[in-house]
Length: 135
Image (cartoon, rainbow, N blue to C red; front, side, top):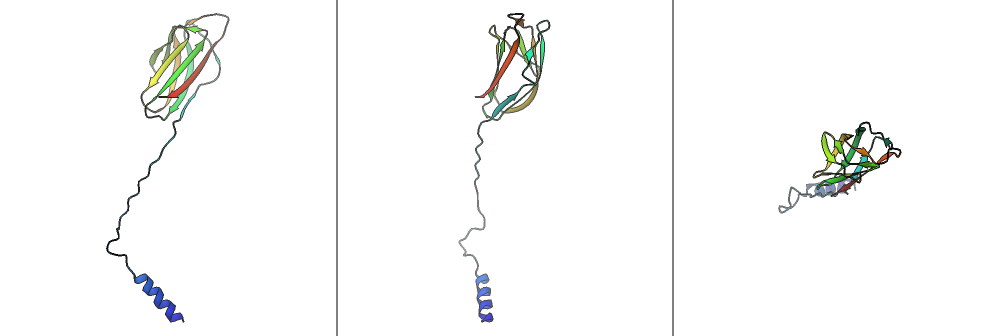
């Protein structure tokens, strides 16, 4: 009985693949990543202008969309001036809004400052709200 099992096992392993069988294979893998954008401010603090200028601090932004993204900053109680982001200036309009766009995905830590801005009501605080949106 033991001899029969051994012979059939040897015969099974002796069978080779047919001549038409391919020895290489191709696998196509497609990954889809959902759009993801996030912006982190140094803190939720009021902004104190000194001579129309203020340091906001380092802002961390990340967005993985291939077509880029927009960063919209809205300052309450602020009119005009410029928002300096990483050495580039963006206008702050008379309503306290500033828009910055990127045409590429990015992960960045950028220093933000306000320059030459005017407080609308000197006794009210200046508060900044920021959003980031994919294109």
